[in-house]
Length: 410
Image (cartoon, rainbow, N blue to C red; front, side):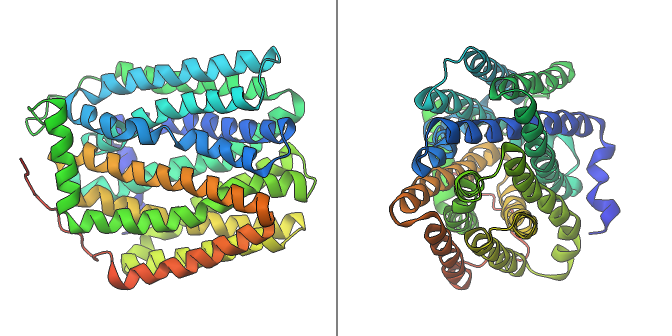
């Protein structure tokens, strides 16, 4: 895949509008991530409480991802997305108001982050499944990759911007800016015409549709493979995301701006990873790309554990961003192209559930480990777990050309 081919989906107006609006919204989301994590370090000195911010954001997926996937296959996805985006706007705005009036404690912050996570969990399956509706089939792999690109561009810009806003104002302003960022997506979705009803959408009731989706995932070896591989990687990799604010604030005695720059380096590395992903996919198998990406992310985790000078640590986070993008995009493209259209949103709900569950559980585990034996030791253990997880590659390889499995289950 050439570099020009990688950007081809942006020629399609609907995809381009959604892509730009999502970029702005994700900048706001990453600003919230920095604001919430940094605010928690000022409210509590416990590494576990700081790690629980990530858990509160991810935990709602246990409750709503699968039902949201069923609904996204049954109703018009555009209308569903309008509801979920409006919910997140309200939750972010309410948290901003509470923060500005000094009514936010550790548990209030976790509850508000949980509410935002509910909206994000309900939004995810419909958003992922909407991508094939916006581009021709031949542009789908590039569109999936570009969706990751805009998310990671936001990861590069949002944290640094949040650091500057935090230095100049307060977390409340950061939360309110996040609320405003949802308006662009709502406007774009409102303006776009409704998609014709897909005749492959399940005509059965909610429970039957959920059973169909569950049976598809249970019977699809390729899809089970990507769930296992992704879950193993994310469970160990979550240590870096959960403990980075602890290292920045408590171990390095840094500022909110410094933390934002470090998180921004992860995002910048991810954008760099997107630039090299197309030639990597053209030259190497999915397994090779995921393998080297995992090794590089393990090295970044070791770097976070051992480095205490700012700029060497920033370089390690840049490398970690490259590794995260290449590995996760490999899994994401595999999942998108494997699941058939008739069950796509439900299958992707399982994919997102596995991702968020791994983040939530992993963050809690690594936070508890850090509190008991130390942050550095927890990060070293996570790096070893990443390397050990590569053993799954031998028994559960990703197919070089994933077949489009048409398992019509009843």
